[in-house]
Length: 104
Image (cartoon, rainbow, N blue to C red):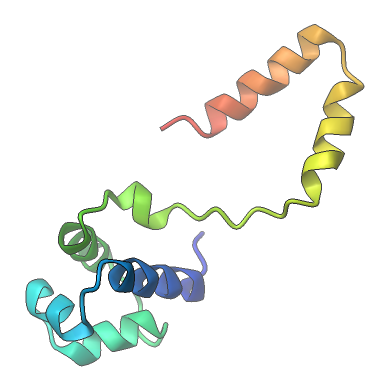
């Protein structure tokens, strides 16, 4: 489940990267500016309709908007160590499982 504060931050980040004001976003979404403000501050629950509207005005797919890449880089060496201890066949199985988990 997506944490609402991370989604709110992502909505704002994507909008500001495209230099769209909150008022412009609201006009394109057919709502008032305060709804956009509340969404981006995490004060309003983001609905599927809101996500679709944001994607439309920002030119994103829902997957782009909802995908978060906050990776804890410190786990990579540990993962590498655990995988390196396996034989080649097991390494390939692990890789295939990971690929299947993140297949679009």
